[in-house]
View 1 (tube, rainbow, N blue to C red):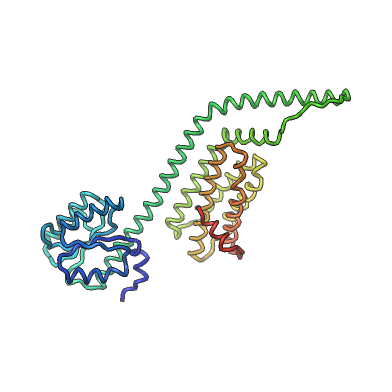
View 2 (view 1 turned 180 degrees about the vertical axis):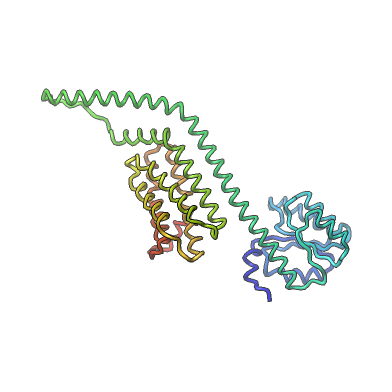
Amino acid sequence: MHNINDMLEYTKPLNILYVEDTLDMQEYIQELLNPYFQKIDLAVDGSDALEKYIQYKDKTEKYYDLVITDINMPKLNGIDMSEDIIEINPTQKIIITTGYNGIDHLQRAIDIGVDSFITKPIRKNQFLNVLSKVSQNIMEHKFFLSHIQQIEELNLELNSMNQQLESQNLELSQKNDELKKSFRMLDTMVEKEQVCHAKDCKESVPLDDTTETYIQEQIEILINEDLYDLIDIHTSIDLDILHILDAPASITQDILLNLSDLFNKYSSILAYYNFFDDLSATMLNFSNVIKENPLPDNEDSIQNIFILVESFTYILGKWQTNLVSSDLSKINSLDASMMSDMSTIINMWTQKEIEATDEEMDDIFDF
């Protein structure tokens, strides 16, 4: 007996179009499919199916995930209809049900790109086995495309950031010249202060709010000299995490060592700026945990760990965007959240008990 829970993992998110001109067969197959699929639209022949296929795309801005069709139908047969659909959408998945054994029909269906065949009379287990395999293939393809889209969106974001940075280079160069002048003025003020103390002056030389000025100057230096390196390291980390999530069973020690090295490099750059000391120290510890501790044996735990790492790297990207703004109120606004995320991941990685409320765990996954 076919296990419905095994199939639901792949079939439940899918929408299908079923094409059959025989009412009894249509009702039988619809009843068979209802527990498995999110949406089932019916068509009575090839012409009706083609019209509904186009209407569905116009209405939802996407195609059906799967088309199941008979061959012998009035107005437009299943082979001709499949050919018209594949011309519209070359990646469309199609299963043909047929009582024909003719080689010509099968060869033509193969030539136009039909994915699978089910012979009539339809046997339930055979039908469900074919559906399970094709649905699994569809969901794996969707998963792959979603990661490709994430990478493309990340590249667009990085390109946009690069353009912003390039447009700021001239301004930063001018500000660097101003900074040099400011340091020379500060040296002059210190010299005057020293002379004044030597002469026991009653008046002191007024000083600026050097703390805020210093941080602002350091942020500008970071943007001009180190931000491109941080972005490159972040991109490499994100690509590694996507690769791990796509194939968690293929994680090797070399992959983990490379990931540890990337976080170590990122931490080393942050260590140059004392207002990021806590974040840098936490990231260094995080890097060492990845390098020195084995992953848990449980596959679900490993998957959850790297989902959290992906969430953390997403927030790290937002943190980099805050740096570009040079807004002092924003540069440390995400530090506590990222350090908390890293601590949670460390506890999961080293299999320590994590005491967290449901609300705190929701915050971890809120990205």
